[in-house]
Image 1 (cartoon, one colour):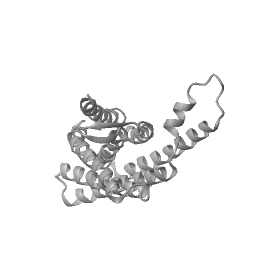
Image 2 (tube, rainbow, N blue to C red):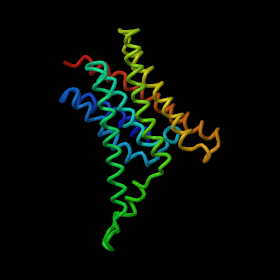
Image 3 (cartoon, rainbow, N blue to C red):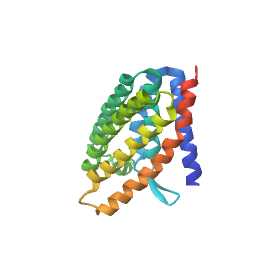
Image 4 (tube, rainbow, N blue to C red):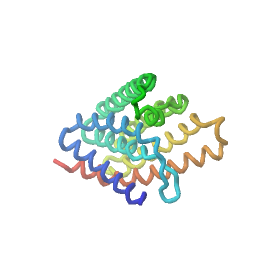
Length: 219
């Protein structure tokens, strides 16, 4: 069941990216990156099992950002892609700030939401800093690699899309897990967690390639 839902979620997210670009051009993609990042930071707390691998539901939405920024670079310009990443970073920080203030309010005796909100929005400061830092670095790395590969191999869209996304994802996963969990888990455990996430995100990255072609050829 999880595998079917995962596949549907991947396809649905990528279709949404293409539709948003079709309807609203680059502005739609810029907004999508912020939307996906904020929502991913909510659903990331839910862990599921896919083909024996433990994965966070945030992976799919985070992966859709790589598709969105690749479309921005391919069809518009890299400055718009970088703007999208900066906006998402700002909105994520604002989202975190607002939710943390919300948790500080003393709930009324009739309240039924505080415990659930605390479970979802409570921060691990170290992991949050590592996540935000690597989000910004990896997405900018994706933009940089995509542009550089396009200069060398202008006709191989599939090559620049997959190489840029996979390298960026691998970099993000391994460095994030090291920053967030060193001293908490053993090094082999950290590598195992990062490798599992990377395998899942490589599969997702390969799946987004057809949608990049569809977006490029849509009038």
